[in-house]
Length: 171
Image (cartoon, rainbow, N blue to C red; front, top):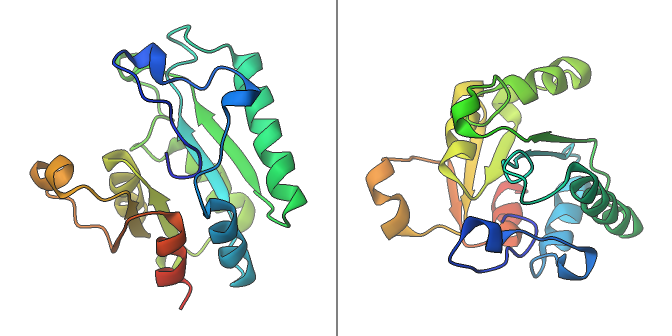
């Protein structure tokens, strides 16, 4: 993940955060978001969560985990303007699943976002592809050359974690 630790596991269902005690922010992730807010960036969380439609995580549990994250971030002075989630599996061919831009369109309109001066930050190919489709700058965190070598991805910035990314784009 970009913000939270994802459980390790062999099966996809083992990689799901299923309850509040399992929810942990990655080191320095909260500080990274605070840094971006100090630089007047608006923050949005846009996430593919097919685990919901696969039945590995209920929508209620997902909403509870999101509310805990939002409360924790708020306590640290970090405001997430909007949380958006696509629960669909790739085979459902929805308009909202990243790298499609469906989830972002309402944000762009509602907040008058200048995409040329915006960043899409994420740890997956779909994040970078979506950012490029939008005309935004892109940041790929947790860069793993071997994993992404075949994708031909060219993000604006590569960073080992969100804190490093925030330092690089907050200049």
